[in-house]
Image (cartoon, rainbow, N blue to C red):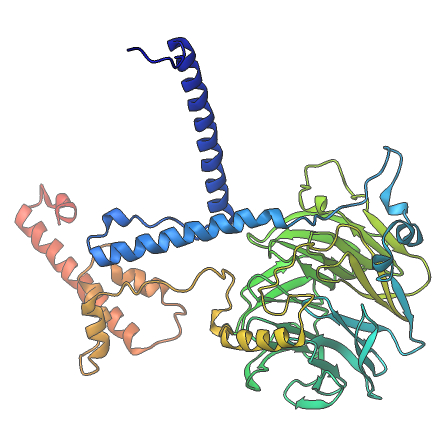
Amino acid sequence: MSSDKPTKPAKARRKSASASNHINDAEAKALAHHVEAAKTTYGRGQQIRTKSVKDKKLRANLKVLESKNKESALQAKNAEILLDNSAGLLEPEHELERTYKVRQDEIRQDVGIETAKKAFELRLGDLGPYQFDFTRNGRDLLLGGLKGHVASFDWRQGKLGCELNLNETVRDIAYLHSSQMFAVAQKKNVYVYAGDGVELHNLKKHVEATHLQFLPYHFLLASVSSTGVLRYTDVSTGAMIYEQSTKLGPPTAFCQNPRNAILHVGHQKGTVTLWSPNSSTPLAKLLTNSGPVRAMSIDRSGRYFVAGGQDRKVSIWDIRNFKELRSFHLRQPASTVSISDRNLTAVGWGTQISIYNSDIFSHTPSDDVKIPAPYMAWGGEGNTISRVKFCPFEDVLGISHSRGYSSILVPGSGEPNPDSLESGTNPFETTRQRQEAEVHALLEKLQPEMISLDPNFIGNLDLASEEQRRKERDLDSKKEDRIERLKKKGRGRNSALKKYLRKSGQRNVIDEEKVRAREALSRMDKREVAKVQKLRREYGPALERFASKSG
């Protein structure tokens, strides 16, 4: 008996099957593209070829590890949907409008109330000029006046942590791993204070420090003195780990590379030297200006380096290959430079501040743009700018000048998505989270020996042979006679002995090895002469001219 169910024609079935196959192919392509993007962004290097591993247990463990890495990359990629905050810049409505003409009062009128509160000004009298520093999470602000006024406070909520009048010259200030400790470079020594203003340490070896930098991943406080001596102190143990003179006179600028913790020191002759606590000589030297280097800054990724000098020149470098990308000149010498999380660059010169977009890093000398137009501008009130610095994770630029401190809004400068799992960078951390983050940071502290130009480099394989290692361990063995080894090599005009004597330096300096080499060379010459004379006698008068060639 035939079934009563209606059957689709064969042509319709083929169409539906092809349509479903097409959908499946599109989904597979989209999924493969998503997995590839996750690997590119969040992957952990090249995939391990587990099929080439013979050990079954090791192969199974590697497969589990690879599957976990793939799953973690996919989860990180899927979590991007939660990053709903994006950085926005000021955009002109038409071609004739310029964003650098927008005033701060106009920006405050168009933003929210809480954002407008972040723009403020502190008039601190005649105690300046001031220096300042932010914590790594951008929550606290530290101010230091040249005449001894120091204050630490939560600038968002307006809560004062401490205020000191040291009655002594303050040259520079810097927060340490958190807002609970900060360092002050005073007239003679560097002092470390607690968050409530209690003096904790007097670093007597840091004499007459003019600039301070703190390396958060290594817990190192670095200073450079007025005589050009660079010093490192481990703040977790209190030990001085490095002290070296730059031998280039008083420093004029000082900054660190956030990517590899290399310190950059600017000098009077327009050079910038790169220093590590593992070397007694600079790792590299850059000639950035034709006069003293007054200001330096490096972006968060460690790619771009901006330097301003007394010659009014601002040069932009690719610090990875030490190549200058472009340069331009200002009306006055730059006194301070800062690069934001989104690569906006603020340059303070005289009483003015020019803020440039990230496009200045993409320009090349071949471009027609000689002086880039600023993205924003501030100043003109007659206050000499002493330092500018972008607040982390905020669209705020801090400015210290001769009469106090000013905070202005710079749309698009801050990173809108902070990594709250990294210690010290959570803007919303509680007291308990801060305490746990300090413990984790101490446990994960990097050693000073790991500071190098390439932070991904750990070490090389020891390629010495076992025979060579055995010789090095055998202290009773005789040293190899260099002269005897050279005597066995090639002879003639370019013999090994003659090369050694030519390259051994000054002729008027005589040592035992040189005397032996000259004696061996003279004996070799006498043997050659005797050999040629013997061949001439054997060849006879007709063929004696071939004796020297055949020998």
